[in-house]
Structures are given as C-alpha cells and as structure tokens.
Length: 386
Image (spheres, rainbow, N blue to C red):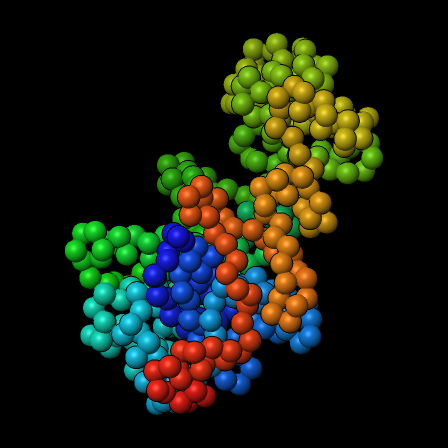
C-alpha cells in the first residue's frame, strides 16, 4: 500500500511550484488529476530540451499524474472543476492571487462545496499584503528572501543558484502544510483550510541566522563565494589536476585530523586554532595551507587521503558524475524507465526514502487530456471539458 493511497488531489497549477508539490504527493500514491488548458497544456511541456516535441523535464514533473484538458475560463470548465473539487481532498494552485476568484473557483466557493477540502495556494508574495497582486516567479522570491544577495563572489553580480530553487522550496513547504492540514482534519476533527505559501517566505525560512544576526549586531551577511563565512575551514580548493575539491574541516576534532593529514601538525597543535572563533581569524592562512597541499595532488589522491583521515571531502559533481556514481545507484536514485512513447529515460528516484511505503513510478507522464474520458466521460461530462 502506498503512503498516500486514497488521497485525491486536483492540481490546477502550471510550470514549477504547484506541479512540483503535486509530483511529490503523486510519487507516494496520491491520485493527482492535473488540469491543463486544452490549447497546448502546461507550458512546461515545451520548456528546455524536447524529444518528439515534449520536454523531458515534463516526464519528471508529471509522472504518476492524470491529465484532464479543461478551459478554466469557460463556464463548462469551471463547472467541471467545481465538481471535481467537491470530491477532492486537496486542491493545488499557483496562479496570481485573485485568478481563481475571478473564475468562481476561489476558497470561499470551494469550501462551501467541500468543507473538507485543503487548498494549497502558492504565489510570489502570498494571498495577503501590499504585494499580493503582483506577479512573482521563483527568481524574485529568491531575491526577496535574501538568497540572491549571498550567491556568487564578493563584489560581483549576484548569481542564480542554477535551478529554480525558490519554486521547489515553496512546493516542499506546501507539501508539509498540506500534510499538516490533512492530519488536523482527519485526527483532530477539523475542517479543510488554506495553506498559503509565498515564494519569498519559503526562501526566507531557510536563511539560517541571517535575521537574528542583523537584529543583534547590525550584521548584513555578504556573498562568500565558495567559502562558508564565519565557519572555518570550509571551502573549495584547486587540485594539481585542475579539478576543485570541497573540504569541510570546521569541526574542532575534524580540523585537527585535517591538519595532520596535510602534514601541518603545527596548526593542529596550535591552541589558538582549537576552536572555530580562532580559526575564522586566521582563515586565509588555513586555506592557503590546505590549497598548497591539494595543489600538489590529484583529486583522487586528495579524496583518498582525507577519506582515510575521516575528513568530509568531495568532488563537485556534474550530472555525468551523478549518472555514474555508485552511491546514487546503490540507493536507487537513478531510475531507469520509459516515457509513454516507449523511449528509455532516466529520472531521479524518490525522496524521502521510506522503508514501508516507498515512492514508486505507477505510470509515466500523461499526454495532454489523456484522461479526459476516464475522468470526465465517466461522470457524464463533455470529454473535451469545455
């Protein structure tokens, strides 16, 4: 039995944040019905690299879902959504606030139809506040949440993290909220409720000590490049082969083992470096010592030596490294499967790992409107869905 077997989810969102939340629930057994516009479907279908006209990203983001094509701007499509929402446990949407209300599909209307419904609403700035009506994307949430200011090299243009981390953080916060709302409903005798997730708040929530440091000391944290400012040593170091290696020697006992491994017993025994505060004051000296040692060795030699010393160390992986790595394979994080057309494709496995109710691939990502007959026709509605 799947962990979320029997959970009925209606996904109205597009692109990344809402659909990632839907994917996460679907991976663990929820029946996710994805509503798409009949003319082209979710734009993610044509984002980035395509095979046979469909994005391979789509194969990941929409696995385990059913697709129903409905025009939410039409009265017929809106009526169908209301009927589906009346039977659902969860509705996911990531439109600009006010959009569903304009279609007669807002919280008040759907809650009246189905008091047990949990509605996950993901937006740039949340459902309230002076910015609520502004359109927002993940990159703006990352900037407003404080992340963008800290990425990249000091004094240079702040850079993206390389993926839409703001969207996925919001999606994961949304999933946590949905599961809490469902528990409250089912265990505490409550009703459904709105889970209101803002992109910027999801980023801000993982910014560690950023705010209390500013409040207590007026400290405005700045970009630290490859280092971890205020914690030493933790940095990237160039090896003799030209590759970069990451070394985390910031625990007190780990630091001593690291210094012994690089033949710097003098630094290992230096009482001024016994704790993090002292190491931070001399971080340039420590980094220079580590860099001098790694610069005389290949990355394989560095990793072998520091592994033997019990020091956290690792290479910077490309996706090619990931696809071949034995740790990924041992934990079944490289899933070899097929798309609906029969093309072989590798997808990430299922996170988190669960011993009794693991995630699984029940069926590949659907074609646009593939399940109209199954979902709409079975209920006597027009199969085209309005």
